Every structure is written in C-alpha cells, then in structure tokens.
Image 1 (tube, rainbow, N blue to C red):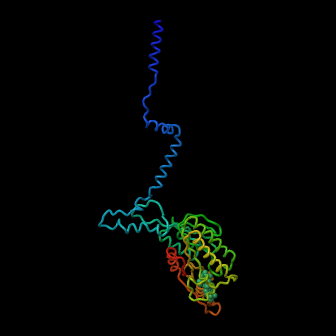
Image 2: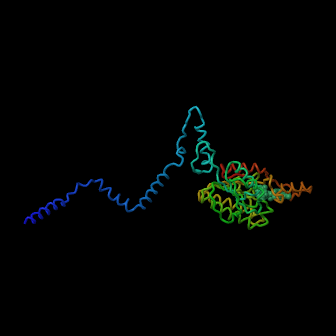
Image 3: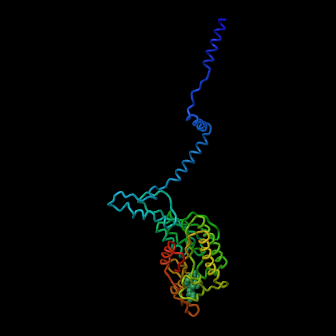
Length: 345
Ligand SMILES: O=C(O)[C@H]1O[C@H](OP(=O)(O)OP(=O)(O)OC[C@H]2O[C@@H](n3ccc(=O)[nH]c3=O)[C@H](O)[C@@H]2O)[C@H](O)[C@@H](O)[C@@H]1O
C-alpha cells in the first residue's frame, strides 16, 4: 500500500510537473517566427532579395549627387564654384542631347563624345576627324578605302581616342556612339560613274544602315548630301526650299538620286523614329588631301598647271559653281551638327 501511495504520490507530482501552462505568447514573437523560418531555411532566397533591394536603392540614387542640384558655392567671393563651373560641366550632355553619364569630379574637363565618321579616311572626312580629335572627342573611322586613304588619318594612329575600321557601310555595323557623321560615298563624278550601282547602293543601303544604328543607340546623325540634289537647277542661287531639277535616268543619277533618297531616309527616320538628323548639302570643295586624280575641276586644273599642261575646259566654259575651302566646310559641318536641320554649304 505504502508503495502504492508512494507511487500515486509520485504520479501526482509528475502530473503536476507535466501539466503545461504556457506563458501568454508575445505577439511580436509570433510575427518573427515565419521570418526566422525563412532566414533559416531560405538563405539563398534572402541573399537574392538583398541584392535586388540594394540594386533598386542604388539605381534610384543620383549617380552624381551634385548634378541635379544647384551648385554649392564654397566661397561667395569666388566665382570658381558657382555658375560658370556648372555651365562648363553640363555642356556635354546638352551637345549630345543626352547624358554622358558617370561620376566626374568637379573641375575636370568635359568628357568627349564618341563619334563615328563613315568615309573618315577620305578628303573631307579626314579633315573632319582632325577637328573632332582636336576638340577632345573619341573618333571611330569607318572606311572601305574605295576613295579614302590611310595616309589621310595615319597621324592619329597612336592616339588612344582614334580607331579605324575597314568596313563597307553597305553591310550593317553595331557601335556604341553619341554621334554619326555619315560621309561614306564617292563624290567625284569620275569615281561615282565608275561603279554607279555601288554608288546608289552606298547612298541607299549604307545610309539605311547608319540611320538604323543611330536609331538603335540614340545617336545624332549628320548626312553629308550634295548640291547635286538640285540637279540642273532652274533657280540661281539655290535656296534650301528649292526642290531641284534632276534627271532620274542620267549617268549622274546614281549619285544625285542616291543622295536625294538618302535625304528622304534621314527625314523619315527623324519623323518616324525620332532620330535627330542634320543634312548638309555640300558644294564643290577643295583643299589639302584632295586626290590628284579626283577628276573635279579644281584638282584637274591644279594638276594640269603643275604639269604645265593646258587646262581643259568642258563645254562653253560658262557654267558656274560655288567653291569652298575644306576647313570652312568642316567648321560649318560641325556647327550644323549642333544647330541646324538643313544647310547648304
Ligand atoms: O559643285 C558641286 O556642288 C559638286 O561638284 C561635283 O560635281 P561637278 O559639278 O560635276 O564638279 P566638277 O567635276 O568639279 O565640275 C565642275 C564644272 O567644271 C567643269 N570641269 C570639270 C573638270 C575639268 O577638268 N574641266 C571642267 O571644265 C565641269 O564640266 C563642271 O561644269 C560633285 O559631283 C559633287 O559631289 C559636288 O557637290
């Protein structure tokens, strides 16, 4: 009995000890429980979520805190940190029409633009490349060397801001650039009549490819057109609103109509796809690096004069042209890219 009593007593005390009376649950512990579970069991998920949150935070923060705020004037007596600095600093974004990005400490020079010059090894193109490089831009020359020559740009070969690609614009090309100067095409009658199909293909397909590139990367586009879009003009001098008098089936049509189509394409990409385009109608240009066998009147006359040969005047000699020196053209083309839509040079 005693043992029974003892046993019962033990049993009772055990029961008393076992009788579970939970503490009132803390509500915040209940909410933490699933989080603790996720932290313990889904570590990979947590790491990924952390990365995503950090990415969102860094993307929302401005990359250069001072860029979207008023410049801080460290010393009211000094103008060095006030508006002139901001003006200088904002300039590249305005020129390219979009931000050049990156964190640039105050006081550093503006970042140059990345520019592709098709036909950049040619007579006009190489002078344009000189101008862009001296301005501080990075230039990629694309040329198939049909009329262009490496010698025209070889003085830039050691410059890290210069690159050259042997490429025919008739084939597509993908480059990350801010601006496209599209000059590639034989411009002398001797050259373009030599291969008319290639000439019109360069003007149409080549321009299409370069405009496609401009659209894709958001680059500003300059088309170098020609006075030949006026054909045999009935109006003198030709104003930009004059539509011309062009023979669509003549021996010069590959160039004349090719450039007219190139202009149409440029304006359609502008209206239809929002590409920023400029068109420069270039007249008869002369200057250093012009090919001696260019076939145009200035090079012919100079070459004949140097050889002490008689100068050949075609027709009755009463025809007129507008002539310009290449450096004048290059500085105007550069202005045109910044300012105008259509410009007869
Ligand atoms: O002046 C222009 O706007 C255009 O010049 C050239 O076209 P073209 O007018 O035929 O240029 P040139 O070959 O230099 O001829 C100019 C004039 O001089 C004459 N000429 C040319 C060469 C020559 O040895 N002798 C000569 O009398 C031509 O018959 C023509 O009337 C180019 O095809 C275009 O790219 C350019 O835009």
